Amino acid sequence: MTEIKKNNILINCNTIPVKNILDIIKNGEITLDEFITAGLSQETIKDVVLMQAKVKTETKTQEDIEALEKQKQINIDKIIKGKIFAEEIKGLINKKAITFDDISDAGVAPKIVNALKYYCSAEKITRSYSVEDLPSMEEGRTDVYFVGLKGSGKSTMIAGLLNIAHSTGVLLPDSYHAAGLTFQTNLIQDLTRGVLPLATPSGSYNYIAASLNDANNKRHPLNIVDVPGELYNSIQDNAEVSKFLKYINNNNKKILIFVIDSLEHENSSSNNTYDQSVVFPNILQIFNANGVLAKTDAIYLVVNKFDAIKDSKYAYDDRPNGDLALDFLNQDFLSLKNNCLAAREDNKNSIKIKVMPFSIGSISYGSILNTLEKDFAKTIVNQITKDSFVIRGGAGKVFN
Image (cartoon, rainbow, N blue to C red; front, top):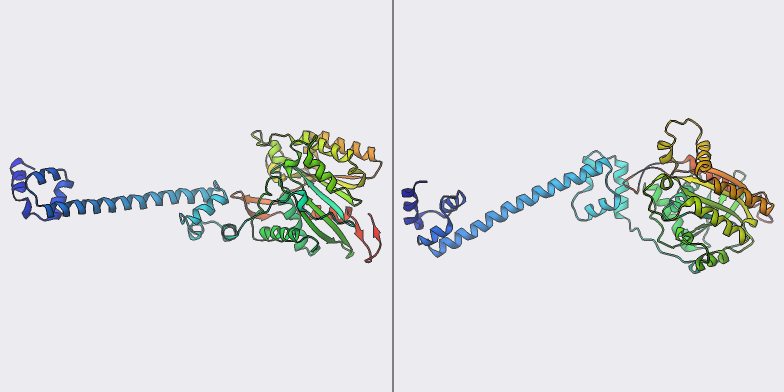
């Protein structure tokens, strides 16, 4: 713009439409201050300022929309690649940053989308129970204790066993402990809907009274106890351990299930302070010293999260799963196995010692079950049925 043209515009500024003044200012040809100095009317100045603010707001809104769309696409890409946890997806859904339609449109399988809907909508609340909160151990049952460190997957394993027992029609719920029945129902329902159960609250016990029917229609009543991993962080002179030992002091026969977190053991960046291969033999000795093993019919050493180590440690090994689990145990948990054998000798009884693999199945987003692995669970349920106390003919009690 020439100086002559600029002066003409300024001299006649009050005859120029507001939109044209805005364009001149936007193009950097004349500033608003120069228009004001030239005598632009107060009304026109007000209109110019308001329109500038409106344009700025509209521009900002468009930028925000574009930024949100960009972030939305980043989140969708993370979902497609499985680089996000279900809890994060739930947060995005609740904030309306993405929708389930967005996830479906991205090509995520309908089964997984439905599982995410259930995960995001269900009120996932778990209560914490101390030993004092639990009912007394009912006698005339086999006590089944799931023992493992924090995060080892005990609750998920119990859910898998109950789910397969339910789906095969051998599970008989028991109303002896209402909270335990509710917990059992939730575990089965979560897996059925494709969602892993929440981790048990820190330091919390869970107790379920239930029975299994065998092939001869005989009932095997069980006291199932999920023992908190934190209990064993320091087992020597631990008052909480003493409470638990007192709680389980009864005449029932017992099955001890050591849940070995194979994935964490293989992971060099483990978050657990305590080494399972060291802690488990100590736990076994505590049980032995307090007479628990004298009443124990079976000890199961279950290599949990087995699929993960099979795909890495045994990727090119064609041996049966049971052989691979035993190989893993002999390499990394030989002390535990040998301590079990020694405990059997100490107690002069026929404790069955069994090594079994277990995996719940393929998982995405940390909590969504892609495929439920049934065979591992079925094997363990069958073994528990085989090794547990049975009621025959409704009267008289026979220990297998």
